[in-house]
Amino acid sequence: MDNVREVESAPHEALFFSLRYLSLPDLLTIQRVCKSFREAINGDPLIWRSIRVENPISRNLRDDYLLKLTAKAQGQLTSLTLVGCWRITEDGLLQVIRSNPFITKLCVPGCTCLSPGGLVKLVEGGGLPRLRHLSLHGLYNITHEHLHRLNSLLSPRNQPLSQRSRRRLYGVQNMAITDGNEDTHQSLDIEICPKCKGTRLVFDCPRDGSSHECRGCIFCIPRCEECGQCLCPDEIEMTFCADLLCPPCWLNLPKCLLCNRPGCARHAGPHARSPGAHFVCESCHYHQTSLLLC
Image (cartoon, rainbow, N blue to C red):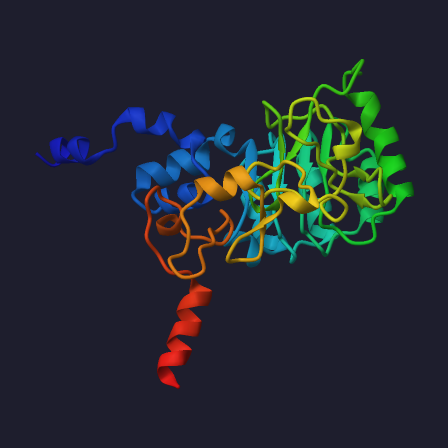
């Protein structure tokens, strides 16, 4: 009877096939469910070939835990994304790279303890012989020399393109998204802005027939938080969170009952963006409460 109960309580085998499609927080949670899940997750290196660390894990991630996390891949790690992991140092990243020589994609946006010069040395040193894409927006003191050197090291590893076939659009939460596919043929995510000559993310305009004049960083060309298109001064509409919208996006979103302004995806909750929603924004609610207290 005990054996029968054990078989009945074990997870269905089909559940194990879905593990490699889960995010990192989900994997760390599910491995606590039972011994079978823990052994399946920790014992299968294919699940850990691509690791993406975001908030809230990134805020407390240190070098020692990153080493333990990447060790689960057993040297087969191919993609590592660390978003805002400001505690990760170059020494810690170097140890991960030495244990995982097959990395083809390395993304470290907002990892402010890393320096562009240190990443140049990592690529030059041969520790990443298969690296094809490097994402480093949000790092400090990136110069034109750093970009030129990294491009010269990474571009020969990628297939040459006869023309620029991918567009980078301005997406939700100021993140770069690629037109049609998340994978990009570009070696680096940042480039030299054609307008201000700064080393930043440079976005294209999703409008049909847009010219090269619409290309630029977010500091040079204001863009709609919803659709990402460039905005002329007479087209700018405001949200209750002070972000910018184009007139069509402004019209399609629910408005605050008091100030008649919508909220962007970064700051407005789901209740304030559902069709036909009736709500009062936080700013109006605060002023209304202050008047009642007075």
